[in-house]
Length: 274
Ligand SMILES: NC(=O)c1ccc[n+]([C@@H]2O[C@H](COP(=O)([O-])OP(=O)(O)OC[C@H]3O[C@@H](n4cnc5c(N)ncnc54)[C@H](OP(=O)(O)O)[C@@H]3O)[C@@H](O)[C@H]2O)c1
Image (tube, rainbow, N blue to C red; front, side, top):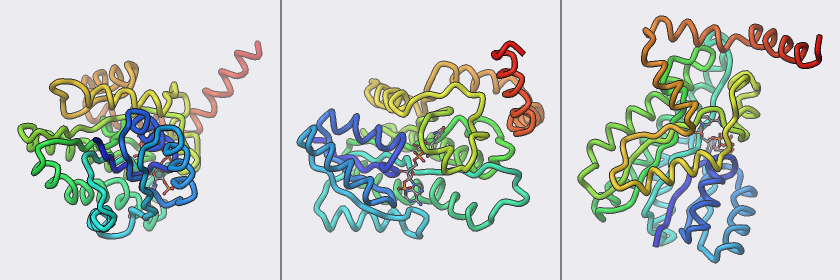
């Protein structure tokens, strides 16, 4: 029986992973800071599917997140057959002027935690010769992201790190890959503090992202990474045709809030027949 640890399960994509896996009969270990959210999701899933759900309220920005989670699941006697490193958040704005402490927390949650949690659980999975690690990257991993410089770099790290682990573990019986969502309707923008991070993009749902990841997991020979959504896959391929200079400059123009506000008001004026 599967027993899957999911970080960032209190909302969005993580909660959607929890619902999809519980519906398939998996036991779950749900991790995030908001215990009330995790407790109510656990109660919902236990009642609906008769599965066992454990809740670990933990701030993944704190040091040694991986060792803490492994000690907690060992103390509870819960086996782990799969890990989904999903927790993450971003910051929108020019780098100069950003709060350095928030950026340090962002790097801790988006970069250090997946590394430490993979380090804590992957050896046991490899020893067992089965199981999986899914790391949630982003379309932001595929190009420099001005005004989200740290977030994009963090997700590029997650993508490269995961693809390297895929190569190192591919003969082990353990499946390791990254899933990259594009703009997806979750609490992500509320945490970023602006819609500018995703404005103008066609939003996908958390369930879309989870379906893409679980379909990839079930493939006979899954590759090191998968992008959610045909439009996002096209954008990633098209981006490879441009120089780094052209990509960075284009992304800087695309993420300009003033330009976006002008485009949005032109669209609403046009749709109002003005
Ligand atoms: N939505 C998008 O457009 C989009 C696009 C590309 C990639 N992604 C990635 O998808 C993943 C899931 O994000 P989402 O879109 O589902 O956003 P979300 O709804 O804001 O969910 C983020 C999750 O991360 C958890 N988290 C944040 N900081 C944490 C911390 N310090 N310790 C423990 N848990 C923490 C949150 O739980 P608590 O607040 O309860 O701790 C929450 O459960 C992230 O890695 C994000 O970067 C999202």
